[in-house]
Length: 427
Image (cartoon, rainbow, N blue to C red; front, side, top):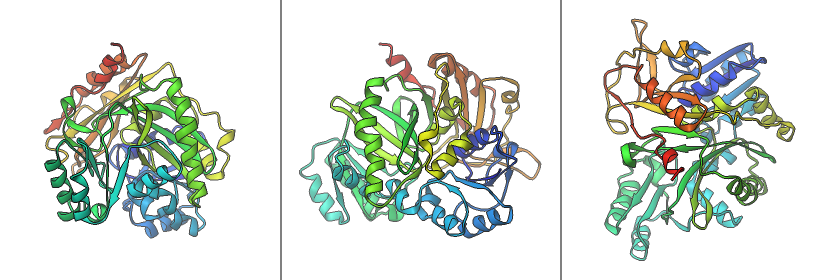
């Protein structure tokens, strides 16, 4: 099979790395890719939003399956474009990707189908939102309705903070049209857990749990980011919680989308909060998380191409999804200092060859490129996902931090407390 992956981040590198292990694959392309992806796939200089060019390339190269990694092209309808041209593609259509593309849609869906989530209201009028804040209980959460690179969520401790948040999202348009509508919801407390799943329109199969670290700085301080590190599995995601979520969240979400005439095929990311009242949905994503993919895919034992095909063909019920439960995985993001606001790029990266010498250590490239001198240099806010597997979460964490020392580049920044919940789970 010839396969094309669309995207350029650490998630796409993890997907490409896993796809490259499939016995079914004879040729692997990635558009546009990055320096790390170029080691396992032929990178093609076509942007993820250039749908017609991508489809034309897929036709020309007789691609058997295209895998869409990123949220923007999914929400904008790349799958519809490919299907209209008779091309096989893994990912939800535009009318299903709205599950991530509109937080208001997602919240209204959960309310209609009684899927547990935080109490909320939606607003398109800034003044109405400001009036609502006068009656609210704080802290309170404000969310831009549309895509905002994982940064359009504001946790406001006071009414004054919330008023400033409404101004930032709806009036100053910090995230552009994503803030035309906002969701204001109650602040939930508890453990946050990410659960990825494969879906074929009817059947949902859960991958291993994971736990993200969104804030830029140690101690969960600083601005929200796309994710500064992750570990899998989460020690807080028990069999009892899984059984509850299967019954009241996972399958009901898939059934609700089908009932709405929006059957979902691809990956649903369930962002959960484990509250005192039980698990509730924080958010949905319509694709693999980043860096969740970097910790979950190294533990997947299946041929991932077979799983992709089962989702496309509606035969997921025939797949026995398996993960290596003897392994735990931790990923620490190496970023450019200043991320997620301002940062410099173009610095040469040293030490990457060490990962080719050691088993159980991985480095997934998020923001890298080759420069004119043939060097791999930094090319983004999040640069690398340094990942390690171990017999336990503590073992994997120790190895991951050990491996971060192998990598050198100017402006290197990382959190030093990824996986702090691992210790908390034992107390």
